[in-house]
Image (cartoon, rainbow, N blue to C red; front, top):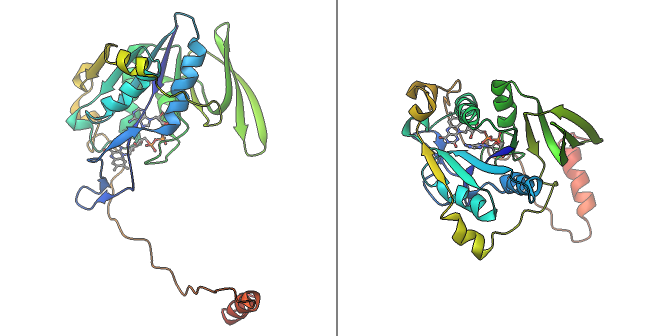
Amino acid sequence: MRIAVCVKHVPEGSARIDPVSKRLDRSGEGALNHFDANAVEEALRLKGESDTEVVVLSMGPEKAADSLRKALAMGADRAVLVSDESAAGSDLLATSRVLAKALEREGADLVLFGQQASDADGAVLWAAVAERLRRPVVSQAAELSLQDGSLRVKRQTEFGYDVIEAPLPAVVAVSDAINEPRYPSLKGIMGAKRKPQEVLSLADLGLEASAAGEAGSGTKVLALADPPARGDARKIEDDGNAAQAILDFLVEKRLV
Ligand SMILES: Cc1cc2nc3c(=O)[nH]c(=O)nc-3n(C[C@H](O)[C@H](O)[C@H](O)COP(=O)(O)OP(=O)(O)OC[C@H]3O[C@@H](n4cnc5c(N)ncnc54)[C@H](O)[C@@H]3O)c2cc1C
């Protein structure tokens, strides 16, 4: 059995948008998206002592290899990085196209995602990839088990839990409540360097350069602007009359 885990390399620290490219500045330090550590952990838990292969997959700049190495240090068996100049500036449409193509090549029985990426926060890529692969998808998985060619998921919702069964192959986005990701051990960190790490171009996946990046995207950022300044905000220090001061403010604004 093979489990593929999609992981994203995200910028560390506060986000900055490059005013020229109108994209998130990804030139600084980056790290494994922390929600994806839950997906890697779950794959390792499902693998257990079996001969299941866990492959981690990312699309991103060369530096994304650092995040893949962290997943290898946690215990994944193999890493695949799709890194190509022409893929920079890919939106959801283009990103899902490239990842789906790489996943088709892997032919995994189960594809795991984190619940969301901490930089773009879309929480939707897994649905787009599953649609392209024509596979069932379950999100917000708080418990996951496999048996006889199918999976069973306890899905966290606003109102409680849904229990969902689906045939394999399938796509699952795990919730951050599903487990506590392990820290890589020193042995794991040293061993990660010797594990297979493949870097693929778009051409290696049989994709034209125009399938990704701005050319392959359906979204165009037309303009960027700062959020509007706050209106009439007043800070009230509580000297014992704060409640009255708030009420006076609301009356003045004709809000009560
Ligand atoms: C005009 C435009 C330009 C953009 N340019 C870039 C760019 O240059 N680089 C860039 O990274 N993003 C870029 N983005 C953002 C890009 O669209 C998103 O990264 C992508 O759609 C995934 O959405 P998300 O990050 O919100 O992930 P979510 O939907 O929040 O992610 C869910 C899960 O998907 C997986 N995942 C997400 N991204 C990847 C990935 N790259 N590889 C493997 N697994 C992944 C992870 O498991 C993650 O937990 C751009 C967006 C727009 C609109």
